[in-house]
Amino acid sequence: MARVRITQIKSLIGYSNKQQKCTMTALGFGHHGKINRSIEHNLTPEIQGMINRINHLVTIEKL
Image (cartoon, rainbow, N blue to C red; front, side, top):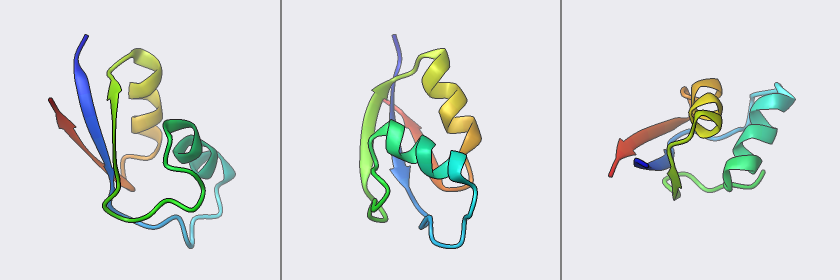
């Protein structure tokens, strides 16, 4: 299974969509996530779907 490093590059301030905030929390960033914080996950279809929902807030790096 492939591993990915997800890095938050933008703040959630100004994004009123609750689904985006809940997705960031579910990935492990929390609702008070700091910019440039990275988390590693196995690339499963569920994680890929979460990344697709918030791709404007994060960068993805394959490991």
